[in-house]
Image (cartoon, rainbow over all chains, first blue to last red; front, top):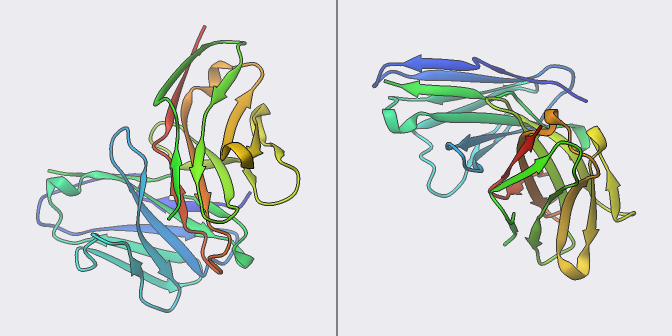
Length: 115
Length: 116
C-alpha cells in the first residue's frame, strides 16, 4: 500500500513553545489530508481536514489558532501546535487520501509531551 | 449523523481460538465500512473494507468481516488467533455520498489480548 510518513515520532517540548509535525505522502499525491488526535486508550478524534492550496476545515471545538495547519504541496501537510501546554500532550496522527479519494493511509503518529 | 459502536473495549482469547470483534453502525445511507489495526505507538493500518458488492470481505492477516445490513453490523473475525494479533482494533464508517472526502467516524476501539 501507499506510504505516509509522519515526523517526528516523538517530541518533548516546554510549555509555551510551538511544535511542528509533518505528514508526507511518499509515493502519491494527496490533495486531502486529515489530522487526528488520540487520547490514551481512546479513539481517534478528527481535528481538521487539510486541503492542498486552501484553508483547513476544522472540526467543532478545535481551535484553529492553536492548531495551525498548512498544506502547501500535494505531498506535505504540517500541523503546528502553538504555545503548547501540558493539556496538549497527546498522540497526533495524520492520514492522506489517495487520488480519486479511494483510500486513506495513516502516518505512524507523533507522541507529543509538553512539560 | 453516522456513528460506530464497538461492543467490548477489551477482548481476550487464547492463541488458536476464534477472534470475534463486534461493530455496529448507524447511518442514514448505505455506508462504507472499515476495520483498522493499531499497534502501540503506531498509526493505523487498514485490515479490510466494505464499499459495495460481496458482503463478506477478506482482509490481511487472515481477518474477514461480513456486512449485514439487516443487523447494521460489520463484525471482524479470524478463525485462529496468533500472538501477533494482539493490538487495538478500530471499526470506522464513512458516508459514501460525501463526495471528495474520506471523512471517517471511528468507534472507540477494542483491545485484543491473545493468551499463550
